[in-house]
Image (cartoon, rainbow, N blue to C red; front, top):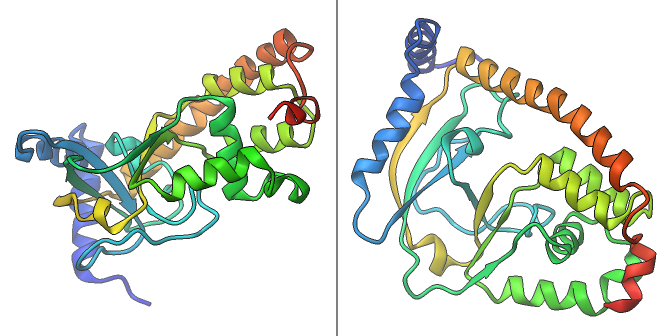
Length: 247
């Protein structure tokens, strides 16, 4: 299927500017800050598809916190999972949280259990036990979840922990080393109605490849750090099978 002329033009324009040290996408995205009203914060959503009409708390049930509308704190963060999808866009939203209920997670054991629950990493025999069910209830009854992002590398660490391959100490320190920032998950229509679309920013192929290389370089750097964490904490802490009876 032929690419629309508008996208060809935008890709050429933004790509040319970026190759000459002018990141139009980042500049345009940053200008959205000027449009915020009192009490609003700026959030970003990367999408392979155009957002038409009202946004809704939908999506895959196997996302980090189940179905919902996911946003990040920065332009780069929102584009993190779209490197392999040309013609993707970044949408800038204003968000005002008045009257909404929140469930906040830090990089903790509860966050690990919640992510593993929704992504299907917890052994089936544990899914209906106390802690996963309590967390799932708290999440489903909240309008907004604010928690660390879990990319595929972080999820691989979580999976290793729930397979009793690594300890909780090694897992937490490893996750902290590759922490990607916070995500906001709009779980209800009350939450998505609190979003105000400000702008849509096109990201050209050269910019997309640049961010991809930055991410790969960062992962390569973190590999040695993770190896050191394994040597330091690999024999400290507890395995999942040891911790579970205490919860």
